[in-house]
Image (cartoon, rainbow, N blue to C red; front, side, top):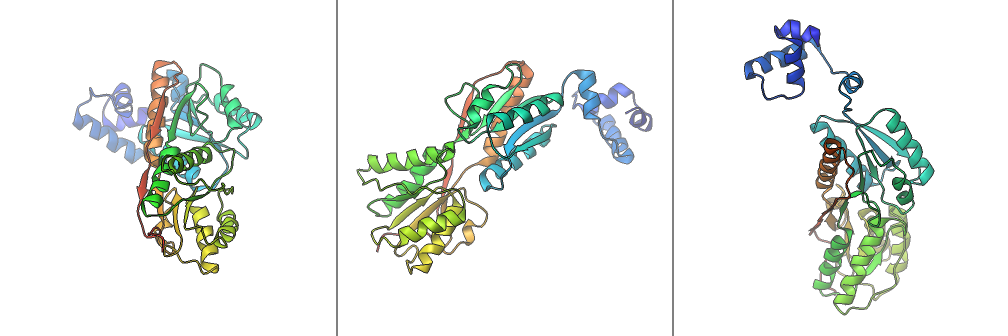
Amino acid sequence: MTDVARLAGVSHQTVSRVLNGHPNVREQTRLRVRAAIAELGYRPNRAARALVTGKSQVIGVVAQNSTLYGPASLLAAFEQAAGAAGFAVNVGSVRSLDRQSIAGVVDRHLDQRVAGLVVLAPVVSAGEAVQQVPAGVPLVTIDGDPQHNTALVTVDQAAGARAATRCLLDAGHPTVWHVSGPGDWFDSAGRIHGWEQTLRDAGAEVPPLVPADWSAASGYRAGQMLARMRDVTAIFAANDHLALGILRALSERGRRVPDEVSIVGFDDVPEAAYFTPPLTTVRPDFDAVAKASLALLLRQIESGARSDERHTIEPTLVHRRSVAAPS
């Protein structure tokens, strides 16, 4: 920083004010300091700054080691939002979101003096572990257990499922079958609830639930069973990868989509528009979830007090060509 000040012809304090975005710096001076920073390749030492100011610019994230589209997209969106706010993100990945695994990652984050913690906790087993985070640590859970008194940001899974189910009923189908995600995921439970409640509200029969995991292979196995049932004309898949597997199984049995069977997915993966046919699906706003989570965490960091605020982000239904009236 001293080198930057010397090159820019300003004081050490002025460089500090520019780096911290202080408004009381003339624009010409700010530009001169920025030019010196660029010329020297200067990078602030976050660890040293934390020791001097007592404030860390690093956020610790606990996430499951997963390539699933939803969690991976949420993590990427949060890293981008945090970076835009001037924070670095330290991600601690765990194989399983259980008490012991989460506790280990949390301890490592706290040892590194992070400013706060964000836990992507979409499964039941993570609930107890999150409760063990020390009370003085700013904390936000994403897709966590709504029964716990921690700050929470989540997609309205039930609303998305209602939109998907309603879309199929409005097309004229007498009922809708549901291929669900794993039973221990809150996302899955919310989508089951929305699907079932929409059918009951419409006075439609509620078919047996078809349990699966989140994979295309699991969707394919479920689709093989459903393809043999001629009365199945509408399917709501709990995510787009399940829908992809179902589409293949229906095709192999000669069940045309959407002429004979209509299908709606969830997540709006980038490939959904290129399925055959292009998939009607529910799109969660991962960017909105990330920004709401970051804002909630930063308020806790500034106030020094843990909160139990809740924010629910509404998803949207994306209409494509996989839904039609029953033949």
